[in-house]
Image (tube, rainbow over all chains, first blue to last red; front, top):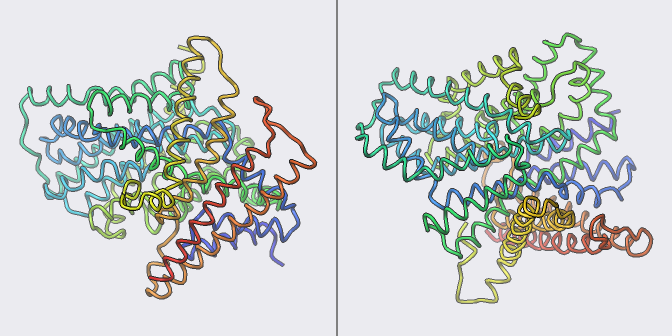
Length: 429
Length: 164
């Protein structure tokens, strides 16, 4: 006889494999089992409402709105122009520029696929035109776009913080140093790969051209300073920072650059509602799924299983990271947080691991999963832009992902790299 | 992506086809405005307005459902399509319809259970919201209406996929 928790999981996986929307698969599995095992179907409607009606989650539509508005305001193009002028002339310069631009855009956008689309549309044609190869260009943009969920603001941290009731502001600040390390390491790898493949730089611009492109992009470059500086100084909560980011991006687009009109704003709003809802569809039913799984006793069973396997913290960490890495290859990040966090939390607490630190580690695993086939949301976007196949992109991204992996190991061994900034913030500036 | 402003010739049809775009745009903008006012008031008046959080959170539920409707209309929901893509055109079409029918079922069930919840709220529970003391059935009714928009959009997509 199959246990209730396994049956729920099985229904979910089978429906998922048919290519049905993930939210629907979660919904069918949870509602069916709540009815079948008499857990009380009256819980479904208030639970669905309650999963969405959470104040911290409001940061999601606002950060999406700010990101879309920044992009339409032409901020991305200006940043691309500046960073291209700054480093484009180095060997592999465009690849390095792509990493830096992706790192920067990660501090504006909170979603991997959104970043892959925003910077990919501009950069991939440049990269291919400069001879970097379709698959490598797509792999590079997809990998750097993964930084978007590691570097704050990040939809991933908002979800993680909401589920575990951990400070989203502290998670945001904790993501800064790991994000910068990853940006630096990926720049070096992009440089080395370019050297090996013989990718040349573009023509070196004059200092005056660099200065002009800097002046044209400086207001865009300030956006992360305002968002993250405000959170770090304790001036804004993450949701407030998101609201300020929206106001700032609308100000840039409507008043300063005058690239968007009132009609565009309506389109930006409707597009933001759609993008945010694609995330929230999963959130609403993943919450219900997680409730059903917990009622069915999945947590007790899994915790018992893990602790029966080993009680050595390092092995458990290795097990968790491996599981998350594989889960990330097949499933979207949001469902993974809802499915795995209730199982992992008792064990994390058992070992006294810092929840902020674990949140960053978990998110890096899921960022890798956004690039690796078969399910690779970022690579899917860049594959559409570049015309390269997912498998080829996966192959080209291997050296980049090994670098990300090395940084992950570094952060596991030295938690202070993650925790130093948020601890400084908690003590007060 | 470009369906918000298209098909100018039939204004009424345009409105009916894009109603959730317009309503969600308005709701999201109002959410932004009140949130912005709340930030200002926290600094200028040193007071955070609790009822604003309540409005925002409930608007967010409605925006989310309308956005889900938009995403069904435009086929932009997250899925694991890698196995489906390997099958023949005919199987793909059947799987797409299967996924849409399952989605339809889920939203009909949630809408049905919401209706019962509203009925219970009006007749027995009588709970009200924390900040504004608005009866919860009002917020749930808004949710139900938006759920029905999702149901309609899924039905329309099923019809479109079938006729392909």
